Image 1: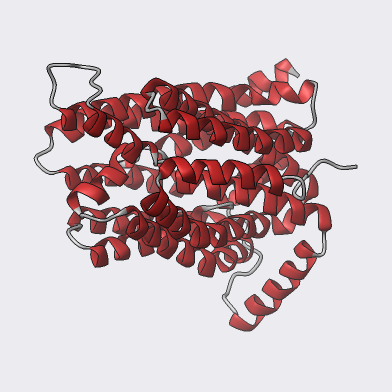
Image 2: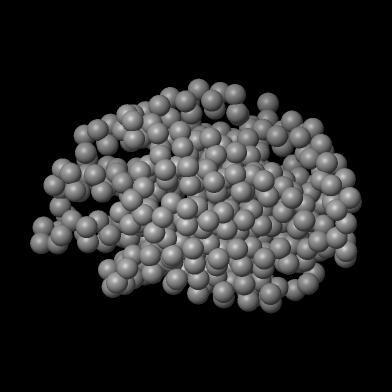
Length: 416
């Protein structure tokens, strides 16, 4: 097995898969998105939640059609389209200034997410089959994802310099366009054998007929249905909450007067701390993602998915007490752990999906997973924002911890 893993590491296309993820995650704005929306656009958490709902609605509407489009008319073509949408999104974020303009940015971002999600994973599956390496999918996906997280880490460290030196905070969105242009060119260089179009001409009638057939086949599979719900709900909760550390630390630092660097003004200190948190967090997440396949030597991926959901609920309970007592280091540590949990769980979910999916429905299934997740985000993002504004972020985490522990009793993926 080690010999095969060495061959995989040296393979040029696998290296391109890794580079794709690295460039995709160079989103320099990520550590400061909530701070930007609160301080520059002057939005509250409920309004921010509605923006994420707008993004979720767009993803929900276009997710499955985009996945079927990829399976039918070419995955490589669709990925190139998605990066055009992302670039447009970053440009509107740069314009900023009002809720309406940021909403337009969210629409384009949602289109990019819908056209991207699941498609690249489906290409990886196809390539592994072509090379006879399909059984090593957990190792390969964990490795490619680790490079994505290295990109996130480098992005966060670079963002510290950019956010301090740039005259306006929104200029950081322009810098995020550069790696996305490079990723567009990288996808263009992929071999045509990974495009795998079934149809050479687009027929609306055939497209709709095939869509209905695919959806019926997927939802008739009870095991696959449970994997879709478990994975999408976990990811939706994480995506809605993952950047709540920004307003949490803002409140702790600016309100309670806790300073890490006494001589530095609070606003600048917050920017540096956030950049460092995200940067270091992604380094550890990269290591976890790259090595999580080793857990399969003792536990099956579906069992590990179940355990991780319960752990998420317990962490939220602890987060409640940490926020209430304003212990900044504990809050940071718990956010570290949440990212490790999320990035360790994802390769396991991809492994479980691979065991249940048919070859000609992979992009569709992964798109359905993302679409279901988008539905959850549409509902949860404004709800979480309202609870946080009305009762406080601490209460939000307490309610979530309790809900997750109850829900996971019905969402167990592990086979009986």
